[in-house]
Image 1 (cartoon, helix red, strand yellow):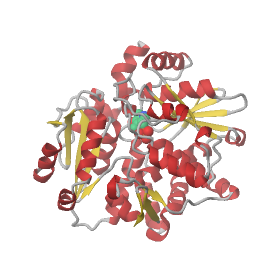
Image 2 (cartoon, protein in one colour):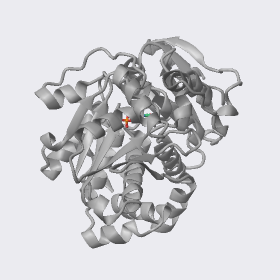
Image 3 (cartoon, rainbow, N blue to C red):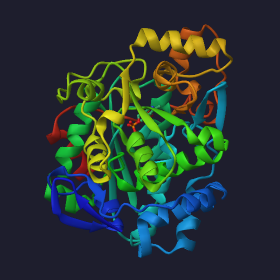
Length: 428
Ligand SMILES: *Cc1c(COP(=O)(O)O)cnc(C)c1O
């Protein structure tokens, strides 16, 4: 597999290099040089396979001969150990539940596959530091995926006080090779610190710097697989008129969905759903890219005003000669999110703020004859505090959370200053 840097098309790297480096020169994102496509009949054959076999073939179509199919399949099997069920919510809408993994969010798919790929392509004695910023869920997925791996040190930055207490418990209580830092700032400040670290050649070389954010191509490719898994569970009729609504923050999930469509998966259109951090909806409505200061919302994993993956979305539209005006979009306020969660609960479906935003826009924009799917990106219990207040009922904690809820936090606190982070990375 060859990938090019979106900011410097002359920089081309292999899949292994892209996985190890994360970002290219000038902080450019890597993008596949070839965009594979399956014939309609090949898609039908793929859809008939089980999740792991099908996913291995999809990933092989991108990765090519860099990794042979049998070891790839072995790694996929080790990463994808939990299901992604499609749960019917109304007559014409279902939820693709992506939260049945160890940290109860869709990021388990990408995080676990990336850990598998990194360990496959690295020498046993190579020292690697994973530096990642999280708005809540990436941190947990990455921490759990890499926990206990000998040659990998993980450093996770998160905005102090801006993630849910249970989210924090899930990844800040592990210790060992997992270091967590509460930054005095918002998620964009954390993301900016990570970018500065990647610009620091000396640091990068000395500590073997790698990022596990959704900017890492291995995570995106893993996420392509569950869009196929969703369609595989639908009837032929539903497949023909499918609209998918994606709750978006950094826009990795939407990029993966669009890549699935570019492979030939029948998805009629997508809806890019955001909370009040609506840089993309405003851009799609008015054509001007004008990020505002990030505001805190109920759907904190989507509190991103400068979404990292957007250049990939634009590149894919350009390469495929699709038009951005085919992309549905919308932003949902916290008040509407709450009302929507209650509306869903009245229909017998307990959801959380991120999924509710995707449902709201899908419900409002779905046309007669279409079938809608919204992504359930996190387990409702992960946002227990807010969900219980909004719905007026209590939620049981799943085992993974219950086990960590009473452990002490092991995080360091740090101002949003690169000099402090640099010192930590050299010394920790
Ligand atoms: C990360 C996350 C999102 C946003 O996904 P992106 O790929 O960053 O757009 C949405 N919902 C939840 C629960 C998340 O953890």
